Image 1 (cartoon, one colour):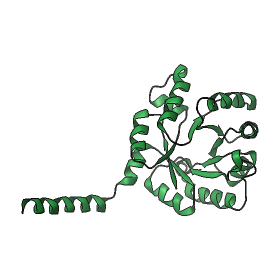
Image 2: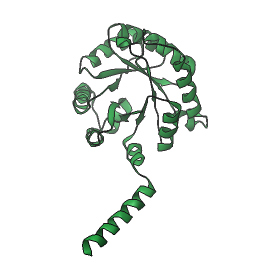
Image 3: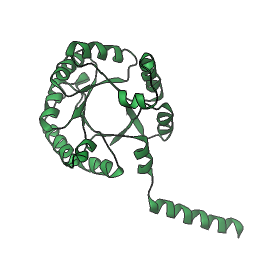
Image 4: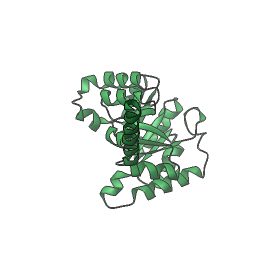
Length: 226
């Protein structure tokens, strides 16, 4: 499983990248607004993220009609070679995805909540598909079960002829809220988990590791003082 950081915070991206396990970044207008982002600096900010990350950077289009999404997608893709255009799963989004994919621009189709949506996105040429987990949990539904269904359904077919560069579509476990979400997503075969920085930090931690490290340091102090 690959890990994408879900943020617009440059400090978080730099820190996570320094761990050596970061494969990419996903961001959206809400995350950009949380760090005080301004519209006139949005493209420059995406470029700064792309400079920090050796991997795909999903930048979300905010338009709602196919022509506008395509125009915005082209502008985003021109910012850096590792930009992936993030588009919501909807009729206009599917149409825009097909156009952009045919132009060699990779798309991450987001806000995916069902197997039919995922299959349509893959057929339209999406390079990545992002089924949401946490949003289902918010309404007391089974987000992990929905993700498992998407992974299984897409695995039944070869969509490489639809995507940019003939690559097989990858499933991103999105709206991840916990290390448990990551664990279950990995066990069911999701290709990528996109996680907030706080969750990524918790994934490194375990009480037995902490206890073992404490014991090791204590024993080492005894050796040094012997």
